[in-house]
Figure 1 (tube, rainbow, N blue to C red):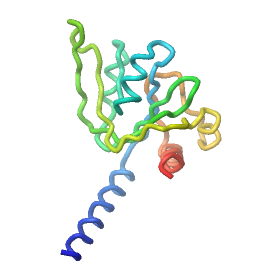
Figure 2 (figure 1 turned 90 degrees about the vertical axis):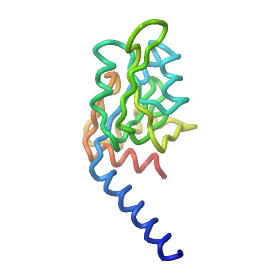
Figure 3 (figure 1 turned 60 degrees about the horizontal axis):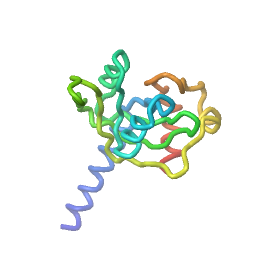
Figure 4 (figure 1 turned 120 degrees about the horizontal axis):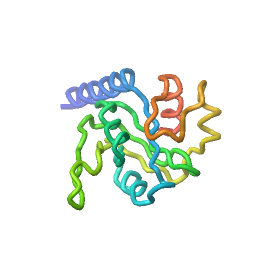
Length: 150
């Protein structure tokens, strides 16, 4: 049993490393300025979500294993996790497909957000903070992920 358990742990670590190495990194604005309810929905539940037509469809760009940083205007990265790859189209109050979202596995809500100033210092290219969803290059994504994960 000991040896089998040890091999299982190694396999899990290998899979985690493989997922991380093939992941894309995304910065998703929680749109706190427009709706605190949308922001809370994402931050409190660990969801990568978008609500407005033209923006909500962008959630489909996020694939299983991608790392998503939830960015709140005026605060910074307030949570992050690994995309499930399963986009849910949520109907609310009679409005079909009101919201698109994905659950973030291994989600961590941060007590102290990583501020935009600190993110800029870590990155080789300045991330686009105000866009609903923007992709970070691999090096910048990894350095932010490592900073937050430790």
